[in-house]
Image (tube, rainbow, N blue to C red; front, side):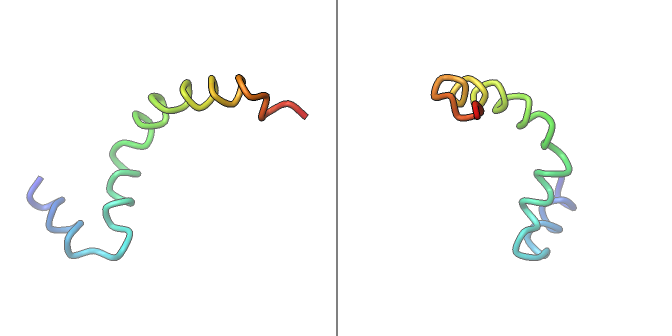
Length: 48
């Protein structure tokens, strides 16, 4: 973890975003998708 932290701190402007993307993208997506879907379904956003 120390190596990862140093890479984030020493990396580019989006190094933290890239780290989260590579390690947690699917877990975050799985948590947020049902919430977003429920909200968009309620307001009919997806309907054309």
